[in-house]
Image (cartoon, rainbow, N blue to C red; front, side, top):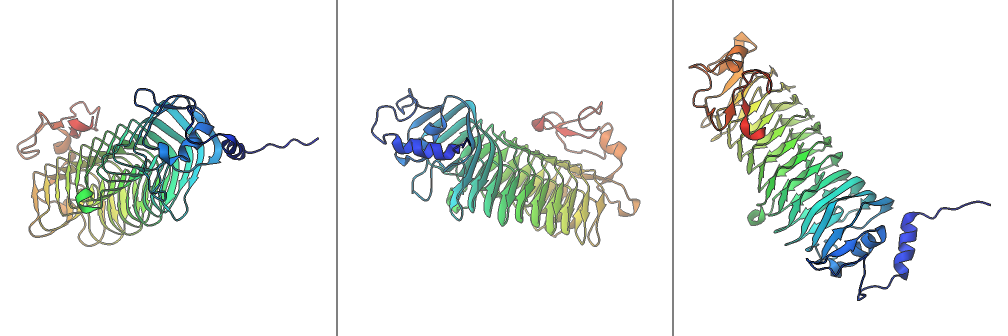
Length: 435
């Protein structure tokens, strides 16, 4: 006699058809949906009930154990298509949901939670071995985190792919708070704004704030335009004490940490290699018109043009930063720290040690500096005597004791530390805030 195994998702569908719907005393494994006594999510059936009941998306939930979906298809909780975001609280209690598939086709906001609305809170939940596919605002945990929402102590190990605003943990955030979280899956975007942790931060004018802090991304990132190891595009919001370590590959405006940034990046770093088929590449950021402070990058960078060890193009302010990676441009504009400085940009208290390769406007600290831009107390490690300038220094000068011609005006009390025993940064100064 032959044995037949009915797939889990079929059994779940049959089970849900037999369960009574809204209005019962215990629609889940227990609880009342209140803050004091949240609904208990203990089984796959509980989860499917929640994802199919928008009327409950403003309530309180707690995950009572790990759930294995056995590669079943799931619908996002909180959906733009149904016109209702998740505005309740979901406490994962440090449990994991794993082995699920989420596909929304041409619709927007794909993730375990599609749209997180005002007051919505996700905390202490891990996503593992998921695949998430969508068009716009696609993330392993959340597609879109909106105004007044919070994500805290969550992680995503999902393979995420989409067209625009694609991120390992979240596709897009607007005026949200995201902290103490991580993403480690492979991220692939085919259009604009792809990041290992977050695709797009901000982007709607007045609603373009938000804060992201103490988060990290470790997965490989592949995108088209505006691609970053941590975040694709920062059009609003501040990011601090975050890191990226995956290899980043793109076709235009690519950075080890951020593809492009118009706002504030503080105490962040990137260690992955950057490979760009087109222009504007940086070990930390591809292009920046905002402020970057106390940040660094260590990965090697290669691009077509505008290739910098730290940044491809800057039109804002960069201070107390450094780059250790090499910068290689197939065409023009490359520099150990930045490829090009546009008008009104500023570099202060920075250094770079990588080698530089390129054609016109290549070599030294900056490939090309525009009128109106300023450089103060910045240095690069001289590797070619023919390209030496007033900012060039020997390795001994950058790694040895401070002298009257190097590190002038640098704060070695609060901001910088000298690596005197070469145990932290191969003898080069390092930033206290990133340790």
